[in-house]
Length: 271
Image 1 (cartoon, rainbow, N blue to C red):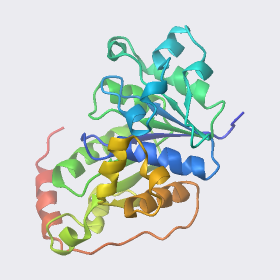
Image 2 (image 1 turned 90 degrees about the vertical axis):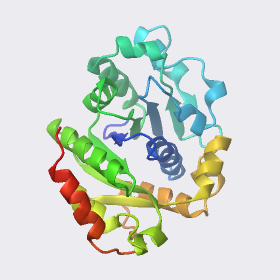
Image 3 (image 1 turned 180 degrees about the vertical axis):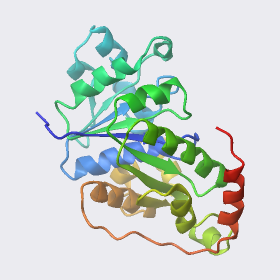
Image 4 (image 1 turned 90 degrees about the horizontal axis):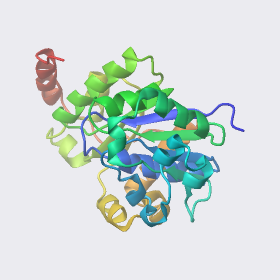
């Protein structure tokens, strides 16, 4: 029985920044480190985590049946064939959104923490009911964003809500980083984003076409192509999460012009 289970919400605010991809690859990377890990798909409206892990054809029961007590938790968990330390608890029917409450999410996580060292919750995009349900069951969080103005602005909103709910620590993963664009001041730099969001940087993930290839194949990059740039980044994030001292990559440093423009936009925001 796990006594110090880490329950980590992986969230973003803005959709399409790579949150679910990070969840899948981080789950594999942690499992490969010998850590019993479960990934929980909390996006009951648009579940995709099973596809990214290549487990969609093995789902029989979901979190819905667990909550309705029509199956046991172990019956709903889908173990990864290639990485036995990893399991998936799939999201249920989208109609669950009509009745799912924070207490329900807390019940699910409480059951999972009895058997796993890490519970990674793949949070739905946005800050509506799905987000609130997921936040209610977590202890800490990883905020995923891209070095783009709209994504960073949404991440800032999510960080405020996490702080309000007492979630800590909250760490940052910067995804789809393009060193050339940063060097040309066409994209916010890593330093710009960390200054704006004021979060510790857990890691960054370099832009890598292999991510798209692996996603379409349902094979997480940390399993299928361990030497690709993004895969190495995912693995380093997993190691840092476990407390290892892995140096951060600094792809480039850009000037402050983009950051200053963004800060002016932030001053006019209304939430």
